[in-house]
Amino acid sequence: MKKELIAELDPKSPISEVFRTLRTNIQFMNTKGKLKTILVTSTFPGEGKSWVASNLAVTFAQAGKKVVLIDADMRKGRQYNIFGISPIPGLSNYLSGVDIDDEERDITDIADYVQDTEVDNLFVMPAGNIPPNPSELLISPQMVDLLEQLKELCDIVIVDGTPNELVTDSLIITRLVDSTIIVTAAKQTKKDNLRRAIQNIQNVGGKIAGVVVNKVPIAAKKYEQSYYYGSTEINKARSDIRKAVKNNLRAQSSNGTQKRSQNTASKRITNNSNRVEHTNSRARLENRNENQNRDKDELQRNIKVNSSSDISLEKTNDILKQINEYIDKEKKNLQ
Image (tube, rainbow, N blue to C red):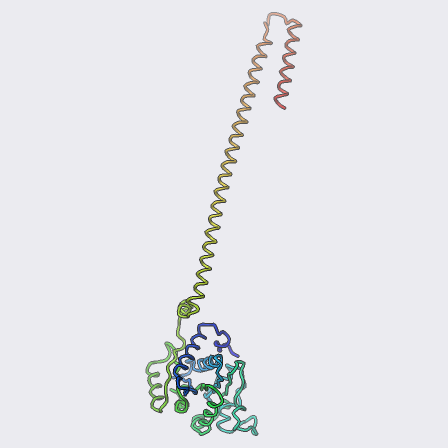
């Protein structure tokens, strides 16, 4: 299965929702239950008709409908590649009655030409071998019988046709089906070509269900806004996440500011304490020096003698005693 089947591989994507909207619009058109066969065509190749046809078939199958997708582009069919099935046998083999691989195959048994897919309720009939006369095969009675039988066996039949500006294959089929969808590409399909395609379908008696505009350039943000789940649930969740992140950042910033303030205050207190301690130490040192100077002056006054007179023994002992007392006192101060 190719990644082109977005409706199956990513059913919750906005693109899948667009295909479900297209399916709902078709169902509302089918009020009387007569719309069972739909042709998907385009003006020129490359506009996305095969992609639209395959994903539309998937959305119908997801709704519980039994769906058969016929690849009627027998010149350049792609559905076998999109769904990863065998390209043969297919539509051309059934209509022509020629099966190159198995000549004994019963062409009346449609089940031999319809293949299962990985999608529940969805079956695909590939284009088959490339015939030399695709248009002649489509106007044969076998094509009418094929559509009638499939309408009885399943709920809806989707036909992937050819671009109707190049060949007449789709114009032939549009007369056989209940309605036709024209796929266009934004900034690629010209209005004149689309107008001519619509006119050609109407001229042969075909009915047009509508026009699908494909490849519309749109920004992802704008896509979400246009999509219900994106504009409510996703945006609300993202808004909540943004608010939570902002609140977190504010809380962290506030905590950081408080911590810085606390650190600053703590530093100031520490500095002040250091200053006070330094001042007290300095004052104690100055007091100690002052006391030492006072004691020194007193000692000098006590030992001062007349240079012309002799010092008596009693006076000498008194001086030594004072010196020892001074030394003891200094030792105690140092301790």
